[in-house]
Image 1 (tube, rainbow, N blue to C red):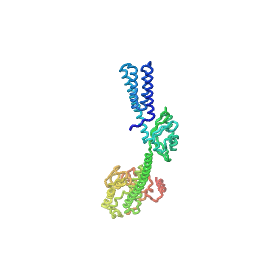
Image 2: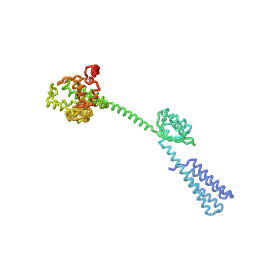
Image 3: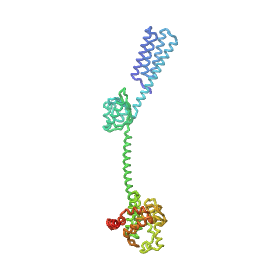
Image 4: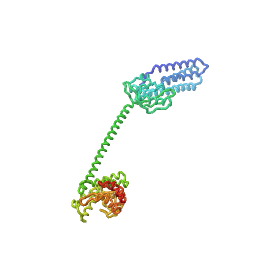
Length: 460
């Protein structure tokens, strides 16, 4: 749709026509200048092109061409047809070219103005004194203020108090250092008193002492980010709580698992030790020997849990044999020896480190260092270390405590017996570690340890 010409456009074209007529009059009246005045037609041609674009430039070019023809006729055809053609073509080219350039510029300006009017982004210019000099309609749509209200006060008036300092720093970075600012964010007050988040891209024009800025309303994005942050915090809190609950349940399960293993060990011991103390003594004695040998804390704890399972295979031994007060026959003793493999079989196939260690101890704690033990006749370091440790702890405890089939040995005699069997039944290193410990503590014997040590010292 063609727009009606504005009064300014009409005035510019009218002035161009008047100037062209005046130039023609001068050219006709003053003969001594020849055709020189005709070159001044470029002035009204430029005015018409600027005022009315390509259309104005061509119309005035036609008018000036007619005036050139009239001058040529009035002067009785000077220069011939070639002269006339060159002047007419020149007028037409000047008018057309200037009109095309002017029209292109008008179209560009109209496109820029249309973009500013319709843009969803907030477009503004501001002077170095801190005032907006121009804002597009998006400011009014976003903030609710009229353009007059926005231009009347320093733009910092509309900035959230918490964002004033960062905004001043960003402005100084541009006005004093001439740097562009990208992705700067602050909050602007709206007409109703709320605040909107704006993200700015701004560039300084030092010569015009202006800032050219484009902002985008990112309030919805910031709200989503806040919701996401709150959700992340709630999620992390839930994860912490669930992890804490899971750890608590795992601890309960671990405690229940240890309790089951302990009760299982007690079930085996109950048949020939209804006090349940043997299981506890073996647990602590094996752990003390392992610590003296320099095993790690985790290894000591694993042994502490697994050692009570060493005689779990006794569940498969007949009461008549297990509780027989006298000496066993060879057949009965062979039956008792089966408890090592029976215990290992009960504990085999588990993924639990404790049960695997218990299986190893049950199978090997009756193996002898010299290879004459049972059930498989392992020798020396072929016997797992846990089995060697429990072997010493088990024999010492069996010697120092009464059983249905024997009386308890004095602690000193039991210690001597363990020493005598160094390198025969027991690993010498394990015996050395055992002898560095307090035997009365291992046996949980009521004799005063200090008196015993004094007697031992005098004997030495």
